[in-house]
Length: 154
Ligand SMILES: Cc1cc2nc3c(=O)[nH]c(=O)nc-3n(C[C@H](O)[C@H](O)[C@H](O)COP(=O)(O)OP(=O)(O)OC[C@H]3O[C@@H](n4cnc5c(N)ncnc54)[C@H](O)[C@@H]3O)c2cc1C
Image 1 (tube, rainbow, N blue to C red):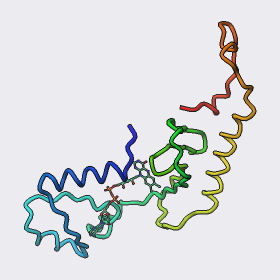
Image 2: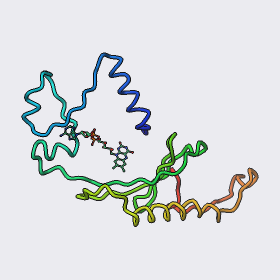
Image 3: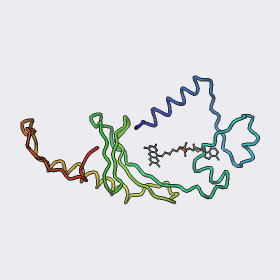
Image 4: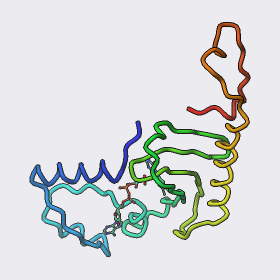
């Protein structure tokens, strides 16, 4: 299942508010601040922030990076390819990935990754230009089309 985070997360927040919930922004500098909260139940959703807050050295970042193209409403499919390449469409853009870099804290854009991702997708979608154009008559029984597995679109 795929969701569009900007739409889905906003809808969740709206539901939460409609149900009587309220949002208060607090930066917890120390774990003792949590003990001073009046709320009887606390869900810890601090992500990587939990590493410092709870001194949990096991928490490790995994860096990802996306390249976002202009939205294209006609793209209603996604692709998963070799070399960790993938594409999926959202209302606000076409997202190209990917990167999965364990232990990397940097939030800066990695230009080599951006170039690899763009080049990989250009090669993949560009390869369609070499496909012979097929008319409906070409799909008669007995006709065989060769496919390259690495070029399969899901
Ligand atoms: C490039 C990229 C692409 C991704 N694509 C997908 C995808 O397509 N689908 C998918 O499911 N996941 C995707 N992910 C992963 C997804 O973003 C994370 O799994 C998700 O954001 C984790 O949510 P979370 O609420 O646990 O943590 P976070 O989103 O990290 O939220 C933690 C929150 O806690 C706050 N916080 C931390 N410390 C403190 C503190 N001391 N006091 C107060 N607040 C604090 C932070 O400010 C933050 O708001 C992607 C990640 C990356 C990097």
